[in-house]
Length: 107
Image 1 (cartoon, rainbow, N blue to C red):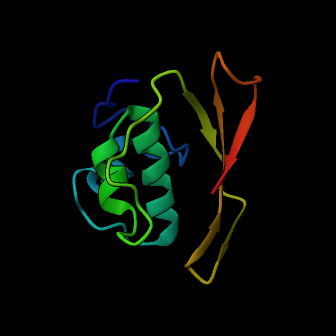
Image 2 (image 1 turned 120 degrees about the horizontal axis):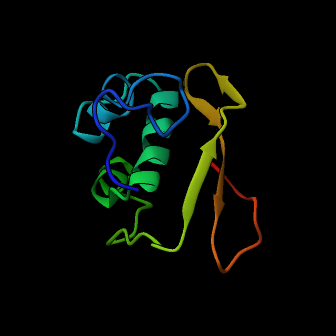
Protein backbone atom coordinates (compact mmCIF):
# COMPACT_ATOMS: atom_id res chain seq x y z
CA UNK A 1 0.00 0.00 0.00
CA UNK A 2 1.25 3.49 -0.76
CA UNK A 3 1.29 6.22 1.85
CA UNK A 4 -2.21 7.75 2.03
CA UNK A 5 -2.84 11.38 1.20
CA UNK A 6 -3.61 13.73 4.09
CA UNK A 7 -7.40 13.65 3.50
CA UNK A 8 -7.61 9.89 2.87
CA UNK A 9 -9.10 7.60 5.51
CA UNK A 10 -6.47 6.46 7.95
CA UNK A 11 -5.53 2.79 7.47
CA UNK A 12 -5.85 2.18 11.24
CA UNK A 13 -9.64 2.33 10.96
CA UNK A 14 -10.15 5.15 13.46
CA UNK A 15 -12.56 6.92 11.15
CA UNK A 16 -10.29 9.95 10.97
CA UNK A 17 -8.21 11.19 8.09
CA UNK A 18 -4.61 10.08 7.73
CA UNK A 19 -3.49 13.69 8.20
CA UNK A 20 -5.30 14.04 11.52
CA UNK A 21 -4.66 10.53 12.84
CA UNK A 22 -1.53 8.47 12.16
CA UNK A 23 0.13 10.68 9.55
CA UNK A 24 1.72 13.13 12.02
CA UNK A 25 2.93 10.27 14.24
CA UNK A 26 4.58 8.53 11.27
CA UNK A 27 6.27 11.86 10.49
CA UNK A 28 7.78 12.03 13.99
CA UNK A 29 5.20 13.73 16.23
CA UNK A 30 4.91 11.89 19.54
CA UNK A 31 1.79 9.76 19.87
CA UNK A 32 -0.45 11.33 22.54
CA UNK A 33 -1.70 7.97 23.90
CA UNK A 34 -0.78 4.28 23.86
CA UNK A 35 -3.75 3.66 21.58
CA UNK A 36 -2.51 6.29 19.11
CA UNK A 37 0.93 4.65 19.18
CA UNK A 38 -0.50 1.20 18.46
CA UNK A 39 -2.67 2.60 15.66
CA UNK A 40 0.36 4.33 14.15
CA UNK A 41 2.39 1.12 14.32
CA UNK A 42 -0.37 -0.80 12.53
CA UNK A 43 -0.49 1.96 9.91
CA UNK A 44 3.30 1.75 9.50
CA UNK A 45 2.98 -1.95 8.72
CA UNK A 46 0.07 -1.29 6.35
CA UNK A 47 1.83 1.46 4.37
CA UNK A 48 5.33 -0.03 4.55
CA UNK A 49 7.09 2.40 6.89
CA UNK A 50 9.82 0.42 8.71
CA UNK A 51 11.50 3.63 9.91
CA UNK A 52 8.50 4.46 12.14
CA UNK A 53 8.42 0.90 13.46
CA UNK A 54 12.11 1.12 14.35
CA UNK A 55 11.72 4.53 16.04
CA UNK A 56 8.69 3.43 18.05
CA UNK A 57 10.14 0.08 19.16
CA UNK A 58 11.80 0.05 22.58
CA UNK A 59 15.59 -0.10 22.06
CA UNK A 60 15.93 -2.97 24.51
CA UNK A 61 13.71 -5.29 22.45
CA UNK A 62 13.85 -4.07 18.86
CA UNK A 63 15.88 -5.84 16.19
CA UNK A 64 18.92 -4.20 14.58
CA UNK A 65 16.87 -3.64 11.43
CA UNK A 66 13.15 -3.76 10.67
CA UNK A 67 12.43 -5.60 7.44
CA UNK A 68 8.81 -5.81 6.34
CA UNK A 69 7.37 -8.86 4.61
CA UNK A 70 6.17 -7.50 1.26
CA UNK A 71 3.86 -10.51 0.88
CA UNK A 72 1.68 -9.46 3.85
CA UNK A 73 -1.47 -7.46 3.23
CA UNK A 74 -2.73 -5.70 6.35
CA UNK A 75 -6.54 -5.81 6.36
CA UNK A 76 -7.73 -4.21 9.57
CA UNK A 77 -7.12 -3.27 13.17
CA UNK A 78 -9.57 -3.56 16.04
CA UNK A 79 -9.03 -1.96 19.43
CA UNK A 80 -10.61 -4.31 21.96
CA UNK A 81 -9.59 -2.58 25.15
CA UNK A 82 -7.58 0.28 26.57
CA UNK A 83 -6.68 0.05 30.25
CA UNK A 84 -5.63 3.18 32.06
CA UNK A 85 -4.31 4.78 28.90
CA UNK A 86 -1.37 2.37 28.78
CA UNK A 87 -2.33 -1.22 27.96
CA UNK A 88 -3.99 -1.70 24.59
CA UNK A 89 -5.35 -4.97 23.18
CA UNK A 90 -5.40 -4.75 19.39
CA UNK A 91 -5.74 -7.74 17.09
CA UNK A 92 -4.73 -6.94 13.51
CA UNK A 93 -5.93 -8.91 10.50
CA UNK A 94 -3.59 -9.73 7.64
CA UNK A 95 -3.34 -12.11 4.73
CA UNK A 96 -0.52 -13.67 2.80
CA UNK A 97 -0.17 -16.19 0.02
CA UNK A 98 1.77 -18.26 2.57
CA UNK A 99 -0.82 -18.16 5.38
CA UNK A 100 -4.51 -19.00 5.78
CA UNK A 101 -6.97 -16.22 5.00
CA UNK A 102 -8.01 -14.14 7.99
CA UNK A 103 -4.85 -14.64 10.01
CA UNK A 104 -4.65 -12.43 13.08
CA UNK A 105 -1.67 -10.89 14.88
CA UNK A 106 -2.23 -9.88 18.52
CA UNK A 107 -0.40 -6.88 19.96
